[in-house]
Image (cartoon, rainbow, N blue to C red; front, side, top):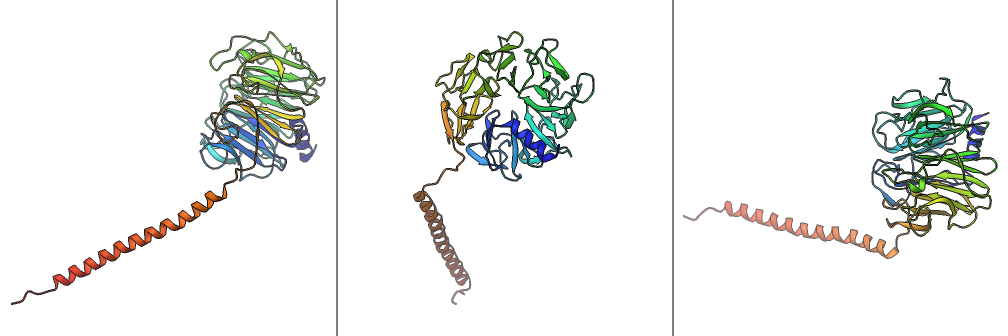
Length: 420
């Protein structure tokens, strides 16, 4: 398969819309239909990619990169694949999750230091996972929980190949999902693999708390798509059925998790076409374009007008015709087939793109258009910037003239001789 065909296949799997959305820890990414990337929200580590470390409550267009085909967020870093398969990264780099050295945080896009070309990418907490054009999987960054699937727990600044349990490279992969410390992958036949952290059974078993290499998820049905959150996993079949395992996101708090799904559980939903997960909640689109959600709702990321969590799926208050969803740490984003972007949830860093930091318990439209300045304000600023310097020049000129006259007078008085 040629590179262009491989990337086109990847895009078909990645999104049903011409646009994409994804959310991180206080920041969000939007890819428009022209290949432009916009970011908004927290920028402590440069994750907005605008060459500053200043947060923004309105979307900023990322420059210094070519046209982009795929985007993904990490917890505090951002990722993008261009039309040639080249991977770009920016933001936090404390464990080498950007795939570049030295280990500085970068406030503008960096090309990942590899000759590999990629078709898909996912950002975890402090690591990154990507599918190469030959359908092998590569990972880099933090590896204490086995996030890199390399068979050990050594961190890596550069892409290292994910291994299967027999030590051979994991091959034939068409989709990956990663958010916290674990990753799911689907091969061309729909078989599901997992590796990384497993404290809550998010790998589909309870054999160990970390799995350092990729292994098949036991008893998992063949998958069309997968999604991951911090402590749970989601699977979508070709028939539109949704299965979950790991912890119940509705009971999750930042500090602890009390409840867990017992084994792999099928959820009561209509026929689903797309799934996505935030850190503590899940989103799904059915065949009619209706949006469903469940899990934690402390910050209003389900858009229900309140903060009540839901263990079972509920239909969300979004118009029919949604074709893409994305979950952030405590945020949800959705794209309508007409191109309208909706957002809801936590907004303490301005990640909702509304120009303020008020929480959104109901869906609001996120516009990529920059705010228009009022004409009278511009005129006042221009007048003031012109008038004030003239006044200063006049005042300083008078002062200097006065000083000069006094100096001349002083010198003349010194040259006067007393009369005899």
